[in-house]
Image (cartoon, rainbow, N blue to C red):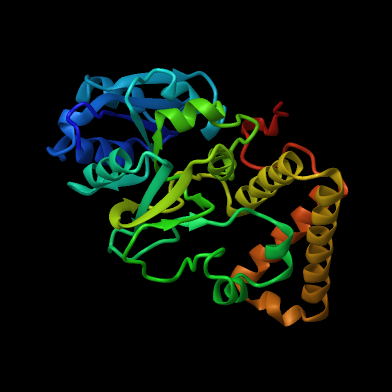
Length: 322
């Protein structure tokens, strides 16, 4: 790899001071990465836990950008990236930890594969067990047919998320906890769509990168620790509603109105069927987990009945977004 290649590290955080400190320490301790880091940027989405003081005191080399309000992941990422100049952008959640030498492998891969727009690692738990690290583009087929069936009969189109891979794999989308994006890919797409507050913003970006002729690649030999879900402080139900808000936006943006209407009708009917099933077979609700799911589907049903408003999920004060 040429010594001229550089990477800008951008981290998004919201009230995760201790995890962020661990991440920054892991970056600082990765000696192999240091010569290639152009900038290290932290975008703070209005934390109230002393994150800014910790960074100023312990990591003076970090460029801290403090947002006065939580505008979501996509907006924060765009803000942070606008302050960078590296050939590549390493975008990280604050609930990740870098393993020595792993980011350098991502950088080497991107430098050698100029047709790759975004690559992502194998995310692992702190016990090194693998997590889901890539995703499919949401579509009508996935709503009708179980993913396991698609993975079995169409492996070239639907890579198996539970399979152990030994070589890079082209995928639809990557999980946004850790992404390396080429500057070219970011510029030609215009960056993240800020209408996505949380969830599917990376899937939308990956789709637009692919539409511009660049590849999205999962790197199974690169490992990054991800304390999955620790950055979402609100309830699981609010998170799932936020996912549906983003899904609603994604389908509307990338498909015809007829497709969008049919997709929403299918999901509404599935929701209604599940609620009816809970009512017919009430003993299922003996489980706390099932009771939470039942409450979620009731909330989702109400959200559909209100014609899918752009509020009710994770947005602060449930305010309307553009």
